[in-house]
Every structure is written in structure tokens, then in C-alpha cells.
Length: 579
Ligand code: NAD
Image 1 (tube, rainbow, N blue to C red):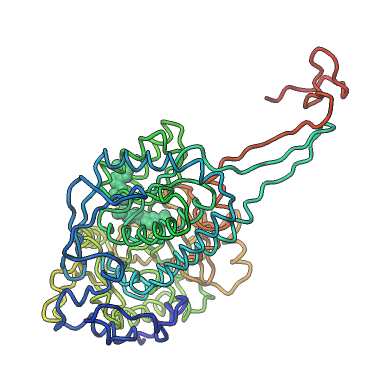
Image 2: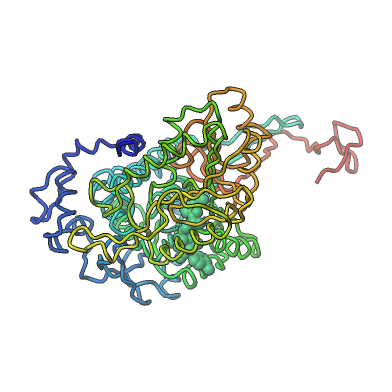
């Protein structure tokens, strides 16, 4: 099978990669490379000097050599914490240095937010929406440079980096529409002369956003775009290793806020360590809502701390996603979806495919096709146009990969594809310091304990099932509940899978893979994935305070449930006290 399978599965990405006249970089070194392809060739060439490879940094106001301050209270950039070196995971090159925030720096940002809060909350929601519209527009203008930064710092291939930036744009667009539809409801009152309604107000406190490395900008925008139109002030603590992406985006957001005459302290940033800044944020009673995206282990702690002070936690935690390919499935579609789900972002999506359940009748056929498909996957530099599988984000990922494969073997597994770290020899050895592994498929018995864990690496387990019921049972048998997919042509199976006795996940797909969700739906998962929902549908309600308001416009004071308290109740009756 040709590598076009994978490319076709990326075809949903909403940009036309060969028609991007704006994909030009201002730096003289890169100025003559006017298309994405030629830019990719330029970036991939071993003869270019490091300064030229990272010319896109200057387009974003960043630099490889100058230390960036990692804290912004809206008015200035400052930091007094430790320095952190940002590394390209494909090459080991230094792409920048960021000075992290200290506890005092955090405090200063929170004070600025609190001072900005009331005015922003009283700004009409459609006016707030207009600001978010401009933020989306500013991101659009820098989309390719931002995508290249996401790719260089996180390690995902460039089409996925640019696709992630597009997701930020999409959610801004979504939030603009939302700013005119934060509707409350009018509820019929049982009392004469009374009017009952729900109003949605901004939160009393601040919103703290803690994000993971694997979606270094999209997760922030899922939260901040909605939260801004809802009238909140926001503090972002990004993953340590993707701080440059955070700085680049917050610079754009700040520019728009200042140019449009709004207080820039409504969107603050504190780069720093999870154990220091993250911990300060979750303990802080001024953070009414903590939106946390990351591992289940850290999320469990966040949940306990925030619940302990009666704050609100929105949790997007680990997944352990499964796909069932039933006997009546379209195997072409299914194999393409499995490949993208398992190999895309080098298996580092929360929705990456980890468990593949194959009906016995199609087992050999699907495995044969998968082996062919995997053989066509080129591992390498994510900025190289031919690459489909980039590096793991951190060196620890390679160790995790090795121990994961070893454990699967101990449990009776058999490696069908891959199974080894990958040491790039191309490009004059430039990739030899990268965190590369081979995308791997391991056949395991249905009883293997390893099926219960999320390993954030490109290892997919394959299990043979006798029927759909067994597949559904196995899908639901783990502690996580994020994304799931069934491939079938049977309408009965489709409706059973999406219904009460079907998948227990937050995302329940049919004939599409587990990864690559649209922003219009509420995104998130159940059980140890944390029950959180972000992005589309009515996820905005979590960023607001619901006020149930009853207005008496009569001259009487009737009580609910017809209670007669000391006489004078026109409704009469004894009623029941409900509250
Ligand atoms: P992680 O849990 O190691 O870190 C996430 C964030 O938490 C980072 O910003 C980190 O600095 C911070 N942090 C660490 N300790 C903290 C503490 N004590 N208090 C507060 N914050 C703290 O996760 P990761 O390795 O960056 O990301 C990978 C994980 O994230 C995977 O499990 C993946 O499935 C999950 N994820 C889930 C979703 C989702 O939507 N469900 C999306 C993306 C990633």
C-alpha cells in the first residue's frame, strides 16, 4: 500500500498546502522559498545553518539566542524563575530559552487579572466576541509560521502543526457566533405575576488553564476563546516543553487586546513548572475554574485539590482508545483510519488508537493490509514533506516505548510491525539525537493487562474478537473512556454502538477513526478521562455562572408549592416544602 493512504487520511485538514502564497518568511535567508514544498525542502536540507532553519521564529517575535521572558500580566513580559531550554525533539537542537515564572510573578499576573475583571465582565458579550474574531484573524495571518513552530517544538509533522493552528482559528470563529447566543431560558412560573428566567453570568473568580504538551495551542483556544466571550479573565500555564508556542500565541492575543482598547490582563500567561506554578494555580481559591488537560495521574491530584476548596475542575485526561473492525466493515476505510489513528502525531494524541479489535473473519486480511500500510510510513524530520511519523516529544518517551513493548512481549504478545527505537542516519546524522521510535503493532491475548494502560507512544495492540458484543465489552473494559470507533455497514450495529448498551466513551464514532475530532462537538471523555467537555456544543456553560432569577411583578407574595405561611396565600393548599 502506498503512502498516499496516510496522505489521504490527512486530507480532512482544512488548508490547501500547495496554494499558500502567504507561506513566505520575511527573513532574507528564507525569502526565496515561496511555497510550502520549497520551504520544506529548505528546512530539510542539511546544508542550511540553524539560524536559517528557524527563520520563522523572528516572524513570531521570537529568537533562538535571546532568552524570552515567560510571564505576561498583559502590560509587560517579565520572569524571575529558572531558565528552561526549548529543544527540537527531532534533532536535539536548541530552538530557544525561556525564563520561567516564580511564585511572585504568578501573583503579579493574578492581581492584574483581578483588576481587569469587572470591566471585562460588563463588556457586552458580542463586543467580547469581536475581540475574539480579531484574535482568530491575527492567527490566520501567521498560520504557517505558527504551524512551523508547533511542529519544531512539539515534534508533530508540519501538516498536523498547521492543522492544529487551524483548530485554534476554527474555535475562535465558533466563539464569535457563541457571543451572540449565550442564551438563557424563560421558565413558566407557577405563581401569578411572576417571571422566571435563567441568566448566564461570567464567573466570579478567574479561569486557570493548564495544558499538555501534545496540543500546545489548540487546547488553550478551546478554553480561552470560549472563556473570553463568556466574560472571564484567564491565566494560562502551558506545558514546560512547549513554552515558545505559548509565548508566540499570547503575543498575538495581547496585540489584539491592546489595539482594540481592552485591558490586556484578561489573558495572562505564566510559563513554569507544574509542581510550582501549576500547583500554585490549583491551590488558589481565586481560580474558580481550573481547566486541566494532561495525564490521569496529575489530573487525579488536580481534581482532589480543586474539589477540596470547592472550586470547579474541568478535566481532560488520558485516553485508551479502541477501534472495532466488524466482519461487515469497509476494510479500505478501516485500515486508513487505523493507520492515521495509531501513527498520527507519533501516537501522542489523547485520541490515538491504542487497541484494535478485529473480527475473526477479517483478522488476517486487515493485518496483511496494515503491515503493508505501516511499511510505507516514513519516519523522520517533522519539517520534511515526506515524513509521516515524527519523533516522540521527550527522550523519556523512547524509554516508555521500549518498556511498553517489553511488557507486551512478557504477556504473550507478538510484534507484527516495528518494535524498536529508530536512529535516523539521514541528513548527515542530524536526526541521530532525535527521540524516534518505529510505529509498532503488537498482537496480544485478550487477557493482557497491558491493554488497560495508556502508553503515550505509537504502539497499537491487536486482539481477535468473535463478534461485536465481545468487541464492545472489551472497549468498555478499561478505566479510561475517551474515544472509540466502530467500522461496520450494519445500521443495527451503528445504533447499538451509539446507544445505551454500546460504547461508554465520550466520543463514539462510526466508520471514522478515533482521532481528529471537529470543534463543533463537545470534546472529552468519561471515567478516568475526567468527564470534562470542552470546545463545542454547550461546553460554554462551564465557563459561566447560572443564575436562576424569579421576578415578582405583582402586588402579592404567593409562595411556591402553594404553601400558606401565616395566611395570606391566595393559592391556598398545604403544599410541601421542597427547599
Ligand atoms: P502531564 O500530566 O505530565 O502535564 C500536563 C500539565 O500539567 C503540564 O502543563 C504540567 O506542567 C502540569 N502539571 C504537572 N504537575 C502539576 C501539578 N502538580 N499541579 C498542576 N499542574 C501540574 O501530561 P503531558 O505528558 O503533558 O500530556 C500527556 C497526557 O495528556 C496524556 O495522558 C494525554 O492523553 C493527555 N491529554 C488529554 C487530552 C484530552 O482532551 N483528554 C488532550 C491532550 C492530552
